[in-house]
Length: 635
Image (cartoon, rainbow, N blue to C red; front, side):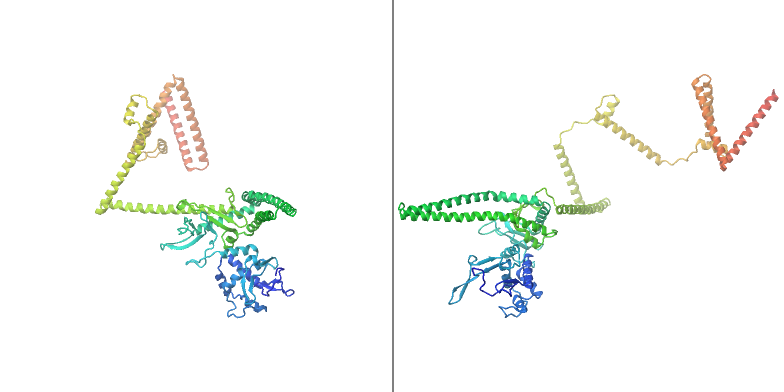
């Protein structure tokens, strides 16, 4: 047995005895797949009884039935259901160290060969041979399963499985584990949270350390996302920070251990020399046997103490070196996962070693609580605060959108409430004006108005008491009198008076416009140009229009005669007359040219106007000739 040779022919489920060498095991792939699945189901958070139900539902044969089907020896051949997996069978499979590749011998020992009574041996009495058999389960999975099975999990009444965080949470004050609560509070909502197991305890009392499960899982997922993203994108920096943190915690202790080992070895060598001299002194008779025995016992005890201390110190150094190696395992774990959108049970069990929960402070949205996360392989580690992962950016964006939607919804509700109150107030005011209020409503309205007046007076008095007393302002009437008297006004008083005058002028203007709008509209009069064109065309005019046109022509004649009279003596008037005649000549020229062009283009109005122009010229010409003939006859 000490050489690793088995004394029993029993082979665990998942292995088969080799055909070449009965003492060697080979993996039974069909059974090994079932073993791996059982371990994975535990990692997924399923209970042993749940695993048994699943295997039975899928009709996976139990170990005895499997061995019977492949023709191997069966130890327990009396069974009724070939698929009746039990929690005991699964428990034996889950705690077997052989699946790690270890060969464990000497598990039982015979105490009395006559009665054949046996007992289970302790771990230090067993013979363990690492790597003696092929491994089915990796070491990390096996240790995780053992840790999960050590924690007692109770299934809540309103759930089909225990909470997956049970056993991972520890109180920061007393060190006890946190207990899961899933209870209906006052028949309104379910309180799904963790509290300290020693809260209101009899022997040792602690505070509640209340933490909701939903928020806790969100914090765990965020921590795993942050550290995984940091590892994948800043691996060298992560390694350096872990080493620095490890150095801060252990480097000084390791240095002391190495120093103590060197001193202990030197002392151990000195003791060897002293023992040798002690034997020589006792052999030569220089040291009596009594003193020799006492000193030798003291030296032996000191050497044994030094050897134990050196072993412990060397173990601490080895653990420190092992921690540096385990850091690479965490990097591989972080790189193996690609989807961190949801916190799964395997992810939780593989990443998190424990979580230390501190007591919270504040209430409602102001509540703050510290959580210390201890990860597998590296322990406590905090990502730098200035690192912002894409997941956090996305979460912040979604949070802002949700907050904007909530604010928009709140505004819509507030607007609806405001409109409803406004409508109710309108209806109340309408009934009040129509004297349709009841006696109770009138009394309530009077009380409301009285309260409003009292509140407004209180606010005015309060505001007046807090503000310093302002200097008295002169009225606008006083400012107007001072302005008429020519007195000097301050810029503020001058601005007030100017603003008052402008407001007054605008008010007068609005009043006049209002009066003008109230008067009936006057009939629209034709312009003098239109009247002249009508007269030239021979169209009839009203007496008023004819009088207006004649008066206009008389005014123009009088003005022209006056200008001619002044032009005889005043050069400026002469220049003005010449300029007026030039302008008139130019206007007549342009008008005739336009008339010629329009008539040539075939415009009927222009042609009629041109005919009238020619007729007028002929009449003027004949009138002039007749006048000249009369003048000649008279002479």
